[in-house]
Image 1 (cartoon, one colour):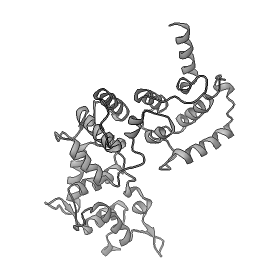
Image 2 (cartoon, rainbow, N blue to C red):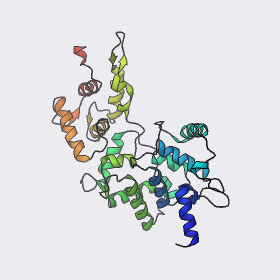
Image 3 (cartoon, rainbow, N blue to C red):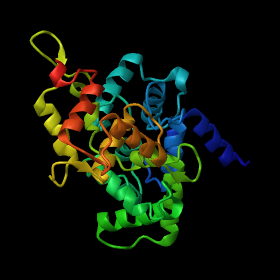
Image 4 (cartoon, rainbow, N blue to C red):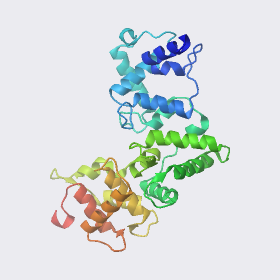
Length: 314
């Protein structure tokens, strides 16, 4: 290792972000796909898909101090605890889009300068409306119906995503392979070389899981002080998933609803988990051989979710 390499190695050990700033202007350099992945994996130390808690504190300290001409080291940092609290508040207000108190990979992508094409893959300006759209995309790109998005299928998805975003087809095959490998490194949590449902859901998020709203967990407070879901609450959920307005939730509508429901109880899940969950839910509401959920059946599921008795028992 020569002197220059030793210097870079020491600077990385002291402050990982310093290597990505121009030594003269202190501006952040444009990151390649692999460099962005290196930044992400360095700060998401527990690999849970978020930079949060002490990870976020460490990132903010290094991000700010890397703009200085010299690294003072953590023990001599000019960033006091009070300044860090204020900095974190401002930072989260600017970049924590979903206001969950932590930074996900899309939110970090808004902060760091990146290759234009790679940046387009994150689509933070155009999230999916609901999990119904997600399941339609899943069915389209899981072309062999294996229950996973393999590398070739992911590459096809990324190619179409870039084509849609830029309206042109100017991404080389080598770049597509690099982007595919990078996305797998980021989102393939169990490192099996493919994406399962829960992993693909992080790559292609919906605006929100409607069922996570507090009202569907605890209901509203009625005059007697008890939590109750209203008919309007249930109608909102039904209309969200009944996209074709035919009076029942079926096919991708049903799988989108079940995916959102499954996320409430299971962090990591695959296509087989969804199939088994579908069988359990449909059996619980009186199995419909056609694989559909009516308003009445949806009401039963949501009341059970909120641990409320059916209306005729209230």
